[in-house]
Every structure is written in structure tokens, then in C-alpha cells.
Length: 70
Image (cartoon, rainbow, N blue to C red; front, side, top):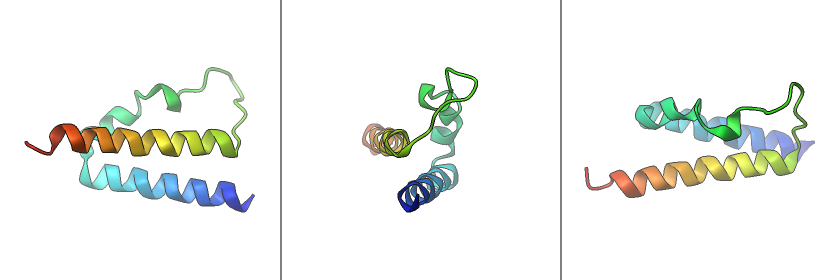
């Protein structure tokens, strides 16, 4: 259970960083298919949370790579 709490904390911190420092990227998070459950009561586990955290990191990394010259 502690691992899930650590992942949730990391997701929250990264999301807050994106919201604060990259508002143009934050707006697109709501449209990310990873955030839209396909079932009424999705099962969320450690692996799924880890995948979501990694997808956020990749999204930010791609944004920084493609916008660093602007």
C-alpha cells in the first residue's frame, strides 16, 4: 500500500509541476487517453499507476524536447 501512496504522491507532484510551469501542456492532460477509464469501475493497481506516472514523464520530456528552441 505504501508503494501506491508513493506513486500517487509522485503523480501529484509531477502534475502540479506541469500545471504551474507548463500550463499549455497541462490543458492537454484531460484529453490523454490514459486518464479516461473505459469501464464504470476501473481496477487501479500499482502497475497501472506506475504506467501513468511514466506516461506523464514522457509527455513532459517530449514537450521540453520539442519546445526548447522556442
